[in-house]
Image 1: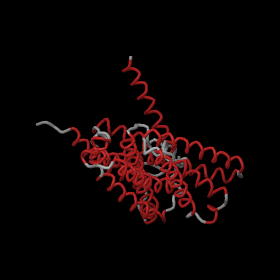
Image 2: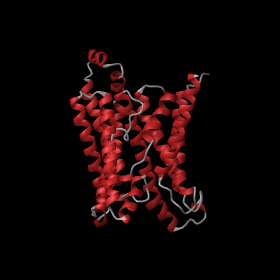
Image 3: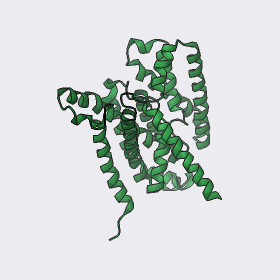
Image 4: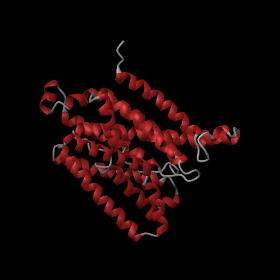
Length: 326
């Protein structure tokens, strides 16, 4: 009996998701199985009010970033396209820094995700306007995103140089991606938006496949490439903006996860898009668990771990590609 390896991988990934989800609930800074040490009302409160929201936030953030990265790479035909290279993350970062530097964050924590979301959407709008003049050429979209990222990053550095140290420290913790300080009041909204967005993007897998054949072939089939690129770009940018505004700037998930899934499952976006979301949730959950248990009571920002793992991963890929070239 021949085993379908891709189908087996999908089943194993679903099982892995539930296992990692459970581990995220029972793992704490005082130990991997601290739930079994003292099961009481306090522990139940910690699981339901602290770890469960954090776990859900990690799931939707990882899924949104991975799905968005997968869609960006497909419609722009560029394996380096992700929320970072398109300027979305830098826009959110600038919005948060403005909220801290000008004192809005001290008024209420609700201003942090609001300013982050506005910054991300302004960045998306700038890239979108530039891309209209270039008729949504993939290279122009990538380049405009990189330019916006550099400009916004420079503005962040300028505000850091002119701000009190306490504002710098508070905003820096958010900038590296940190689930320790997300606003739980906006979690329900983020979950609904991300899940609806992922469903729409997953259902668009067949359209993305047709678009990958080229503009002329897609037109003969009846697919309006430019209109679909606009829709997919805006939707993927929107769900990314929502998650980044709540959970902070987390790198490499949208770049690395689709790359891994494409190697394992192939380029069929009907399967690739939803599986990127599932594996993105697994990966970020795993990183969040590590951030809690690696150094006992010290909680590491999850974005630090994703950057380290992503950097090592692509370094290995570069060495392997060089060996194959030789």
